[in-house]
Image (cartoon, rainbow, N blue to C red; front, side, top):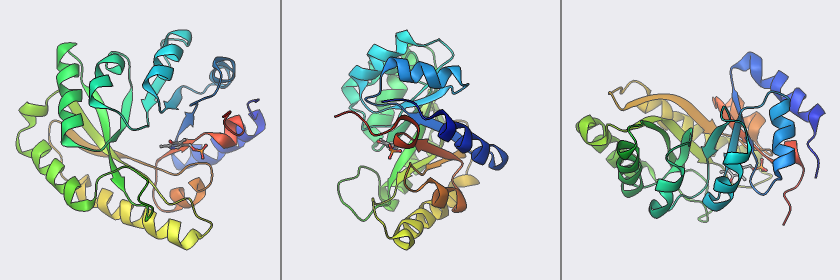
Amino acid sequence: MAVNEEKYNEIINELRPKNVQLVAVSKLQSIDDIKRLYALGQRDFGENYVQELLEKQPRLPADTHWHFIGHLQSNKVKYIAPFVHLIQGVDSLKLLQEINKQAKKINKIIKCLLQVHIAQEDTKFGLDENELKEIMDIVKSDPEKLANVHIDGLMGMASFSDDSNKVRNEMKALTTLFEKFTSQTTANCQFSTLSMGMSGDYKIAIEEGSNMVRIGSLLFGARPK
Ligand SMILES: *Cc1c(COP(=O)(O)O)cnc(C)c1O
């Protein structure tokens, strides 16, 4: 596979005036291709698998920002804690507490996004609205207990669907939740990041208020099997 430099430049030029951040989703892509994007100026990369991320991280420059965007098992947090830039898929209190514990051990504050389930498909991970509220209540009520995490905002994935109205409505629901919590600031929580939109739906996502898109196949071509 080869990096599509033209597409990369096009997307960067599209996002920049709107202050939308690009996370290049590099799961299953080669080190060489990641380095090619790095050479073009890209610093934020998204990975889904801990083992793969651990193999890649030492092979890229230290100023690479690694976003963990997959489903993270609590027992693997300790491996990525020392270098991870943003953990986007936090979908349980248990996971958040484990991230806090591992961050505390190494005297670091780890930035997190809470993942909300917005797609009608039930294959996607994430919190429903009530679970989100419960976690937010705990985060806010005793910031000392979760002092080594910082909740930066929300992440979500819409349905894989050609029905753009459906996708748009799911995204609107996430934006509404995001706005609801934006004013609720504590020492360990201040919403600034709304991560939604992938190769197939990032334009809709930006129209609906996203300020971070996670794009893989448009930049790298189809993922190898
Ligand atoms: C794989 C993945 C992406 C990127 O998907 P593309 O369709 O290749 O852009 C974005 N977000 C998450 C959570 C992913 O797992």
